[in-house]
Every structure is written in C-alpha cells, then in structure tokens.
Length: 101
Image (cartoon, rainbow, N blue to C red; front, side, top):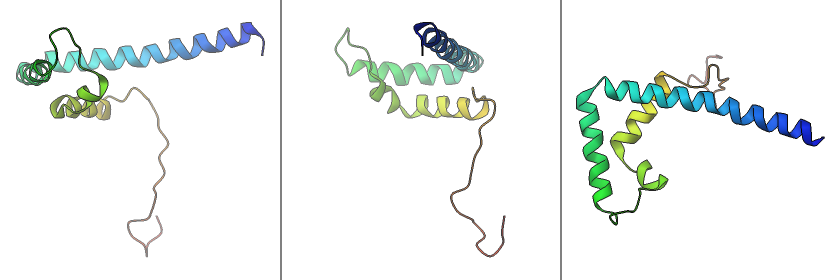
C-alpha cells in the first residue's frame, strides 16, 4: 500500500472511533446528570477511591474498573445504548439439547 492509502485508512479508523466514543460519553453524562442521586453516589465512590491515592495521583484504569457502581453504570449504559448498531451473536451451546433451535 502507498503512504496515501495508509493515511486514508488510518484517518477512517481514527475518525470512525471518535463518533462512537463521543456518543457514548455524551449518553453517559446525560444519564448521570438526569439522576442526581446516582451522580452523588458516583461522586462519593470516586472521592473515596481518590482519597486512598497520593494527593496529585490520578486513578488508573484498573482502579476505575474496580469501582462497582461506576462499572455497573457504564455497563448498563453500553447495554441499553450500544455504540455498535448491529452485532452478530452466535450461541455457544443449546439450552434445550433435545430441541433444535
């Protein structure tokens, strides 16, 4: 592939990923803003986790992933408002072994 083709493909990948990231983040912020109780509970969870760190040290991805409320809210938001419009799924096994699905 020429450099031009590589650059065009890279641009498509980067810009294509931006739209799903923007829409997911906007949806998350909208849902949290619409629910003040949830917003306060998330704030407390994040502040408690941050209090265990050095004053200017940020929480890393693994620490954020271990916050149960934040994880649940993000997972539910992605379940209800998936950034991927269509996903093919295939079952791993039949639940009713005697009845073909």
